[in-house]
Image (cartoon, rainbow, N blue to C red; front, side, top):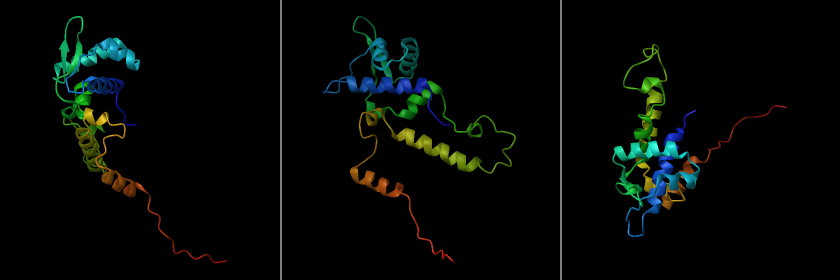
Amino acid sequence: MLKLTKKADYGLIALKHLAESATSEGVNVACSTKEIADAYDIPQEALAKILQRLAKAGMLVSHHGTNGGYALAREAKFITAFEVIKVIDGELFLTSCSTHKGECHQSSKCNVKEPLRKVNDSIHAVLMKISIADMQDPNGPAGTESKRAEDEVESKPVTSQSNLVTLG
């Protein structure tokens, strides 16, 4: 099953918390690791390492002192879920043959390599479109209402009538 690691979850949770902590004027407010960890029942030591990694990558700034902590280094709309996951977990690959390093022994005969590559690329594209600011919307990162309505129509199953005749 494809799922994010706990570390990636924690990183996304922390960045969303920091984005929500910004003032109405858009000024980023520093929050301590302890404050974030306590708010979401995240192990503080693990979160500290994740926040340090995100700061090193330029997504957060670290403030020292009594009122210190971490704040977003740039606006939440300019930080994507993909960036956060990549910094914390490295490249995201659906299958081992999707890596740039090597190929498995079945590569020349594999009949699902290309379809799985397309799935992998689609996942990357979706994660690149979702920003931390999008995550603040309780309705999710969908676009306009009309787009949501289109998606709902497209996602409904199509039922076709059958021309079967029952002989009895």
